[in-house]
Every structure is written in C-alpha cells, then in structure tokens.
Image (cartoon, rainbow, N blue to C red; front, side, top):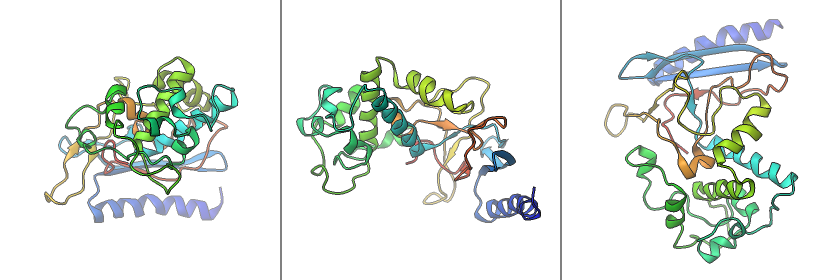
Length: 266
C-alpha cells in the first residue's frame, strides 16, 4: 500500500466524522476498494436516532433508485437469452394497460423516455403512510395514460421501472424478487444485497431519516415495508461493501450509504 493511500485512509474517517457532526447527519457507512482489495470499511453515527442504535458496516440501507441499475441488468440478461427484445412493446408482456403505455417499448422504459408518470398523484406510500403499490394498483395509477408523448423528452419514472419488473416476471414466469436474487444478485457474490424487504431476521436495517425542515427535527421512516411492484425502481437493500473481501468481482464504491436517505427516497 502506497504512502499516499495510507495517508488518505487515515484522513477520510476523521473528515467524515467531522462532516457528520457539522451537518448533524444521523449516520454514514463507507467502503473503499483499491486494486481489488477492501482497504477501508467504517460506519459513523447512528442507525436509528430515537433508539440510539449505533450504525455498523453490516447495517443494510435502502439504496432507493440505485435499484434501477439492477433491473436494467436483468432486462439486458433476458435480452441476451432471447426472451425479449428492447423494441418490444410493454403491452406484449403486461396486460390491462392504457393503449399508449402498452405501445411504449422496453427501451423507452429503460431510458425514461416513455412519458410515463414518475410516481402518480398519490405518493404517500413513499412516506410509509400506506403500502407501496402492488401490480394491480400500479396498473390503476397508469390508467390515464402517459403524461407526455413518448420520445419527447426525459421523464423520470418509478412507475416505468415498475412495469419493467412486471415484464421480467412475465418473461421468466417467476417473481421479480426470486429471479433477480438468483440471476443477478447471487452470481456477483452480493451477499449483503436483497432486491426488496423484508430482510432476514439477523440482518440489521438502518432507518431512514428526513431532513430537519420544516419540523426542526428529523422524522424516522423505518423503511421496513416491501416496495412491492415498485421494487424494480426503488426496492433494493444493501451495505456499502456489498461484495465479500475475497471476491474477484469488486468494483469501487461510488457513494457512501447514509442513514439520512429516507426509505424509498428516489
């Protein structure tokens, strides 16, 4: 290990500890990989403010819209297997859709160019006030059709990725969670990654925390509810490390997982 790296690894934890105290963030977990080796893994702060539970590197975080990367990988794997084409209309796999949404292609859904609504008019499920949409409710939310014409411009959409999850289920004959866990998560050795809640009883979960405004304090969103039909867009749960230290499939961590990220945040 070079001298510059030793200095950096000594500085980074002290810098993050200061930043958390300065910003009054609840907690943060990081993992750093250098040339295929895990060289730093630390957790700072709390996993849950009301209980004072100390955050550890083994706490799972809701990783929100990073889930979409996994779903996109699943779609591309099915394309490689010849089970779908990217220019297929989604209506070929998912029934009971508005005609204009049924005509949208898988590629348009992947690239957020299908014109589909982001979350619909009622987003209280992201705040834990009601269950997240199941497949039937997702179809009902989309009954009015797209908000804009396809290929007009970027229109970010969790609902669009929910539809991609239904495509995966139709193409595989399995649940999204089961197929993704076996075909995408397991082959990469992601032993601390799950496609959705609930977690195994022994796996601790870092709670989500809101910002301090407008109430002047952080509100906890436990994040323990499953993301149901929207898991393909926001359901994945993981640690900062994700890979075991012995794995040859390591990739550098791009972002720390912070417990300020509320459960289901996009």
